[in-house]
Amino acid sequence: MDLLHARDLVMTYGPTRALDGVDVTVRSGESVAVMGPSGSGKTTLLHVLAGIVRPTSGTVALAGDDLVAMGDATRTKLRRDRFGFVFQSGQLLSELPAEENAALPLMLGGLGRAAAVERAGGLLRRLGLAGMERRRPGELSGGQAQRVAIARALVGRPEVVFADEPTGALDQATGREVLDLLTSVARENGAALVVVTHDAGVARWCDRTLAMRDGRVVSEFTAPAAVGR
Image (cartoon, rainbow, N blue to C red; front, side, top):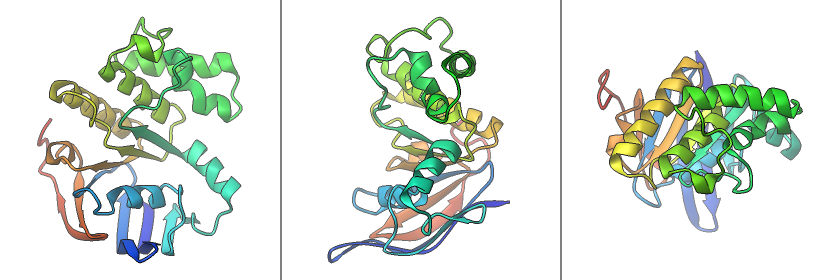
């Protein structure tokens, strides 16, 4: 089933067209990599699909809900309740332990701290962080911190997870572990996954890859089953 549906996206910054007529469809439970060199428009596309910025023109719909027409407050609530995010640096709060970092979306959504931390702790243990729930980000390795970021992205059971260069700050072996967890747990939770990357090795973990250049999708291909796994 088509979940996220974007048509004829244009994004301009002065004379620059960061997106130049992009069409994207993401199905429920599907993982999609968006590849391209620096300046190709891939991060701009992620920000538009996630409702972080409005396109200059074009449409973005999540299960029929029009993101472009939503007010700022509605889009903020949508990003909190229906989307999850994983960034290159993790962007964890240094003063909070892992379980509270992971539980933040639930607490911001109104769930009590005890219930939110309990659910987050279960996900952290599933991601191999048993016994580390009370450690702060400075006490974790890069790979462990990214696992906390994955838990935070998935704890609210989002419909779509957006990941922007999620292994860019990790060594190759740790990056493979993080990708395995990100793709497999998102799939098990039924979440679609959109991964922005410049690395073909990362893209091979996804079901489908869109290649971008100069603000356009120039090619699309489906990865052979189990490649890179």
